[in-house]
Image 1 (tube, rainbow, N blue to C red):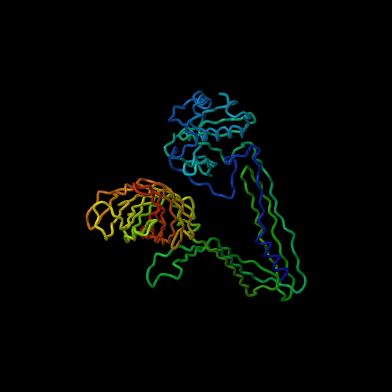
Image 2: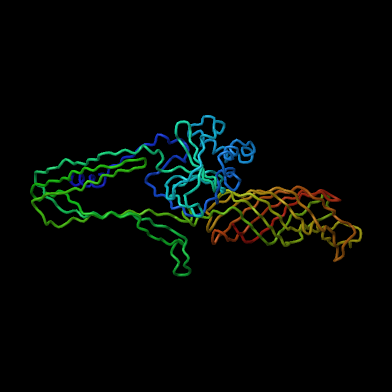
Length: 498
C-alpha cells in the first residue's frame, strides 16, 4: 500500500514550476501579473472607460509638449483629483520620487505598440468608483495601421509605462524588461526505483472528476416544481483520466524509471517551466487486469446568493392601501363624551435606497383620515346628538424612515421601520346630522412619528407584495385644543425594486 501511495503522489505532484523575476515591478497592480491566467482578447474600441481623461487625444494632447503641459496643468489636478492621484503614483512607481514634478520632456516618447501585445490595461470603473487593471491581449479596433499609438514615460532607472493616446489609459506589457531573457539548459532526470520483494507491475486506471453544481431558482410551476423551489445544474469543471502502474504483491521484481531529458530553452519574464516526467515500469509479470480508481467531488453554489442571479438592486418603491383606525381624545368632565368614527381609507407611497439586504432608508408620504365623534354643544348642533369632528381629510405625514429586514432578497422576509417627520392636515370640519357647522377644528401642521411592522414576499428580484401594521403618532395644535392622537393603518401593497 505504501508503494501505491508513492506512485500516486509522484503522478499528481511531479510537475515542477519556475518563474523568472522582473526587477522593475512596483506596488501598483499595473505591474503585477497572474502568470496562470489567460489574457482577455481586447478588440473593442478604446475610450469607453478613460482612466486619465486629461491625457486623451480628444482633449488636444497630440504632441510631447502638450502631454507635459497637461501633466503640469494645475487645473487638471483640481478637476481630476482621483485620476491624477493614480497617475502620480504610477510616476513614483517608475522612479520619479516627486511624481509629476520630476517629469521632463526628454522622458516622454511618442510611439506605437504592436497589435497583439499582452499586458495589463488600466480603466476607470465608474460604478464603484475606482481604478482597475485587466490582463489583455491588446488589439483594439479603430487604431492606426502602425499599431496602437501611445506615450512612453521612462523613469531614471529605466522603468516605464505607456499611456494610450485614444483613451488616456495606462498599459504595461507582460514581456516588459527586454534584455532579461536568458537561454538555459533544462535537464530532467529521475532515479530508478527497484522493488525487489514480492512485487509486480499492475496497470492502474485513474479517473478523477471535479464537478460544480449550481442551485438556481426553478422556473417550473405546479407539480413539476422541485422541493425548495431550486433546480440543480451540474457542470464538469476538470477531469483527469490516465493509466499508470503500481506494485502488487503477486510476486516479482518491479522497476519504475523515467527517461532522462535535456533541452535548451529561452526564459523570459512570465516564463513557466513545467517538467512532466513520464514514469515507465518494467515488470516480469505483464497482462494483469487493471485496477480502476475513480474519485468525484462536487461543489454546490446557490446562485441567488453568490451567482449571476443575485439580487443586487439599489432602490425600492412601495405602494400600499388599506384601512385606518385612530384614537379619540378624552375630556376632563363627565358632561362631554367622545367615541370612535370607525375605519377610513389609508394609503402610503414610499421610495427607499437599499444599502444592504438587511437595511434601507428613504422618504414616505401617507394618506390618513383623522376623525372622531363627540357630543359637545357647538353652535348649530342638535342637543343630544353626536358631532363628527374631522381633523384632517386627509392628514398627510411626510416622513424619513429607516427599515431593517430579516430574510433573504427572495421569498419571505419580515421588517420593522422607524419614521419621523411633519404632518400636513387638510379639509378639517365639524358635522352634525349631515350639516357642516360654522365651528372648525382648525388643525395646524405638527410633528409626527411612527413604528411599522410588516411581512413581505418577493416573487423575483424585482416584484413582491407586503402586509404592514403601522402605529402613527400625531402632535397637532387645533383652535380649541392640542391633539395627541394615534392612527393605526393596516395596509397591503406591492413592492418594486430596480
